Length: 172
Image (cartoon, rainbow, N blue to C red; front, side, top):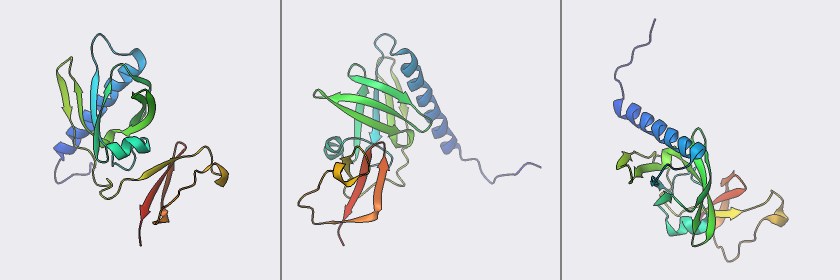
């Protein structure tokens, strides 16, 4: 017997399929590159807990930013829940991981195509942004020393992902 539901959540289904379409579009570009003059503007929530960007980029854009995939990008890798890409900002490459759940808008201006999305903001950081520390490995000698910080680090506020350590500095 089939389980019945009280109501169909059409908005949730619609958002799910829009994200799948965005994933498909990025996979096409990952495999073949951009055709002609196409390029993408992708707006995402930088305070989403799974977004990985440099400290300087997060400081500049603590809540949201728009990236352009056109000329100065490399290493596009599409994954099940997001994508990795390196973008050049003033000649400096920034390695990023952008989960699909953080994206609020996708635009291909050449094609005149826009996908409005509702980002998952339930876990977004609403206070101070996390500080990123780049580490090569887990030993103490390779971890940068933080000076003049008068806030305590709570152990449950430390997250690791791809050689980056996310530290939430909170005061007691």
